[in-house]
Image 1 (spheres, one colour):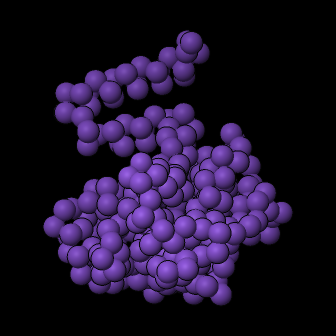
Image 2 (tube, rainbow, N blue to C red):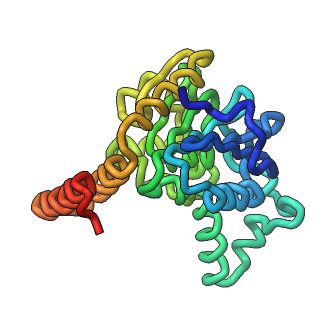
Length: 267
């Protein structure tokens, strides 16, 4: 059975992020429960580092969090005039040149991007509050399993901002434009039952069963040959951007690669 790395020596442990690796499974844990796993630039830089540190053996990445909340979202100190010591405040960012502001936000977004790589399947195990940046981090993953106390909310619009950490694209893809707009514009909570029924979550379970359920899912994901999963993920991720005939052609090309590989004829 796959491990969630809870008892392994960390590969990395800093800025509220812990990475453990057990052969084909990496576990990324948000590990600052005292601050409800609030997020800021240091945490985002560490998440980017995590993506770069993953060994080639890793097939599945599990994202989980310690404490009652998955992530309460942005560290509100970033919204104050003084900001977080050593980091740009929002006011400071607003005063920067257009190119600098764009580059800064793009750098933050990198923490939410690598989870979608075709060579990995990422699974978020989400309990309690997943608000703003926390919601978007869960959306960065391919799959989401939630505890029955989960509360998703996109609060950026309520603060006069927009969700800018790559969450809008997957949200619309999962629940559709109208519901995505309503969720973001109202900032309301989405609970476990709705999350499953709308496609935000793959499953909802009692909190005490969350880790075991994710472990079972990881085992199922690892049961299929890696190259077949990689090709399938690439096909599915690109399907919305292709016409029907383009998708048919992509399927043929992928299957040709798989058949030649299985027959020992791959380049």
